[in-house]
Image (cartoon, rainbow, N blue to C red; front, side, top):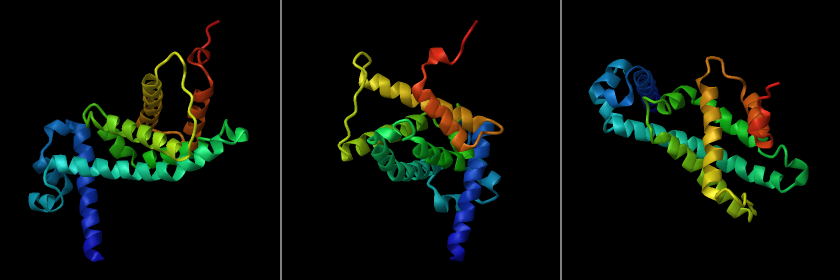
Length: 203
């Protein structure tokens, strides 16, 4: 038990060092020596846990994606069941959105670092891919009928929706004092039912 706790603490220090260094120098310009020094460990200790900085990045991102996938696996089926109930059409994604946003917030510092210009450019695509794949999979499992716009191709619709949602999440996470997850969930739900031309009015 003591060994496991010590290992977890060492990994936490390494990840904290990674976050700080990405924000300061960018992932491309840091090396194992930088990470080890910042974490207060030897290079040998680093190599006990990771092969190199790219293995560290891969493991960190895989853990984040795993947490989010678990949240989606738990919440999407409930949301789809509610969607099939006409009385819940307006509020069906609410709990799913809150749960997902809460998971994002729990890993806020790491996510914002990875998704920044100095982080990993490929990670945003991985996140979007996870959301798209999980949502499609769950709809198929529930034999859901999804109707898309007749004019705009399906892939463009999905890209626009995912880009907008990820943009909202990144803006929220990057704020000095982010609003509660429930408040951001309401903003996202409102986005679903209003057109952009209705957001700003000029007299």
